[in-house]
Amino acid sequence: MKPFRNETIPSYWFIFRENLLLVELLNDSASIPFNSNLSELNMSLELKQPIYFGTFDNIPCYFFEASNDLDIPKKMSFQSIRNLYGLLNEDLLWVAGRAFQLSVWDKNSQYCGRCGTPTEINFDERAKKCPECSFLVFPRISPAIIVGIIDQKKKKILLANGTRFPARFYSVLAGFVEPGETLEECVRREILEEVGIEVKNIRYFGSQSWPFPDSLMIGFLADYANGQITINPIEINDANWFTADDLPQIPGEISIARKIIDWFLQNY
Image (cartoon, rainbow, N blue to C red; front, side, top):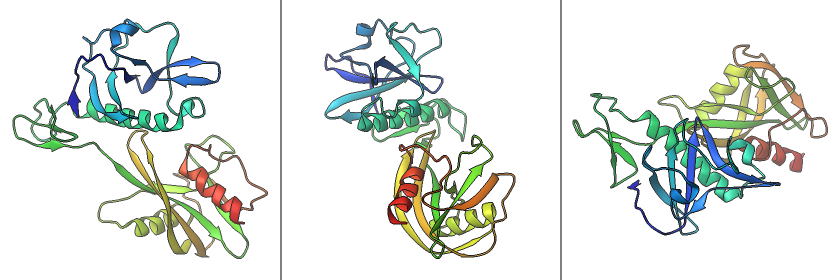
């Protein structure tokens, strides 16, 4: 984390307003503001100080939160980052995700949680520091497991419609890791809590940053061991076993959930 320097070097500007990102949409593509400074966009820096958070292809990157009354160029608009998948360069999309995660952290760490004093950016590391009690506040990262459960005998995958999902939309199971819990313990607990079955042969699949706002998704595969599906109605509307040729509506390609399901399709 570094303070803004009024340079003439072209930079990427990740400008947020109410969790939306400012982009220019043109036909079937989107672009991030790329200018030497915001004056080229007729935008003032007085409302919020930009924060430098790294480079992309050796190009400086800044983020800041725009106020609701900030005028923006007519050719630009604020869009959900998720909706930019397929429109924005994928690598740049994940840089935008990092900028969003840091922006949320910046807003949520304006004051020290220990003594209430306004915090300051610690330029030695990515952190906020309390000038009164020296308490350090680092960006929040919330680890969560996500798991594809396979019935090896029937060659089926378990998918569920969560209470927060649209109707007919199904995905693999996921849940946040609790204090003192290993990832494998979390896999077993979440599955038992949400659908009432037990699994075996838990193995690592992959991971994905999911900055909405601060999750780290750790993916696993597991084999069905025993039990009948018994849903937890607080979290799950429906859960069932599906074959590769009879899937319901599933997540988009941006997510690790889709990568797990695609792995199932390729192997079964």
